[in-house]
Amino acid sequence: MWYATRADAVREADGYARILRSTSVMGLASAVQAVVGLVRVKLVALLLGPSGIGVLALYTATTT
Image 1: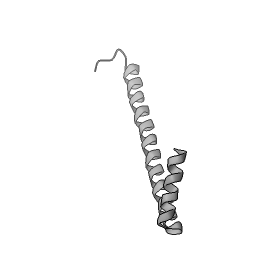
Image 2: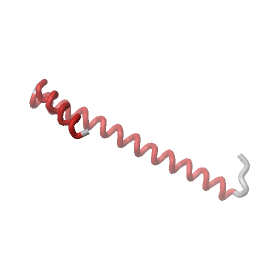
Image 3: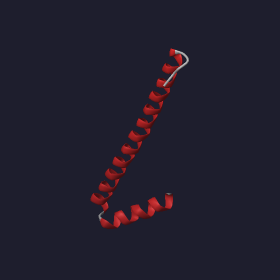
Image 4: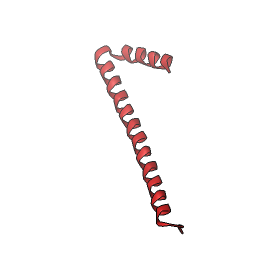
């Protein structure tokens, strides 16, 4: 690309870095949320058994 000044090139590169950083944060947050959900279901399954999973599903559907 052709830039009017070097500052324009640096500004555009900084914009791409900010986009990459924010996308990474959102992706990491989604991954952590998925892992927490898996751990929660596993704990409920161990503590309450199959009926506990059904109750958890009903609770999740109601709150969502």
